[in-house]
Length: 113
Length: 112
Image (tube, rainbow over all chains, first blue to last red):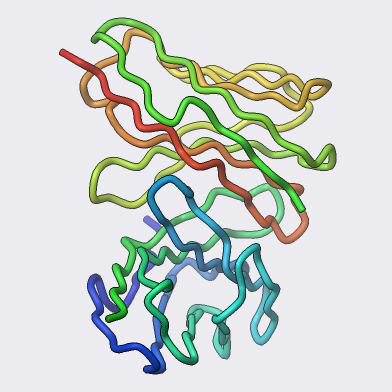
C-alpha cells in the first residue's frame, strides 16, 4: 500500500520563523503536491512537482517555496511564517499516465502565533 | 486556470435516502474528474473517478455522472448509511502533469 508520510502532525511556530514541512512517499511516484485545507475553502494547491528538481506554482504559491532534491521527498518552505498561514497542510503523490489517483499524507496542522 | 464549484456545502439526509452532490468546472480541456471522501480527522481518499469519454460510472452504492456540454458532474450515493458521513470533494484535472483542482467540499451527514 502506498505510504505518504508527513514529518509532523502538529506544529506551532512564531511569526517570522522559517518553517519546513517534509513529505516522503514510498511508491516511486513522479508527481508530488502540496495543498492547504481551510474550512469553507476546500483544498487549494500551493505547489506541485512532476520530477526531481522540477516545480510548478499552484493556485496560491505566494509566501511559499518548495524543494525536490530526491524523487521520494518534497519539502514545503515558509520563508517567513505569518498568521494567515495557519492551516492544515496536506501532501500528496501520484504516478504517471493514467495512474492519476492522489495518495494523501495525514496532514500537518500548522499554527503560526 | 480551472475553477471548480461545488454545492451544496452541507447536506443532511436520513439513513436509506439518496444524496446528490453537484459540481461544475470551467476549463473545457479538463478530462479527469475524481471524487474524494474525507472522514473526520483522516486523509482524503479516492472513492470514484470518471474520464471525459464516459458519461456515467457506478461502483456499488455510488455513481458519478458527467455532462461535458454543460461542464457538470455529480456524485450520487444511494441507500445512505451512517458511515457515509464525511466531507466529499469533487475535482477536475486536465491531465498532463495532473494538476488537480478541488471544489470546496460538501459535508454530508447521514442521520440514523
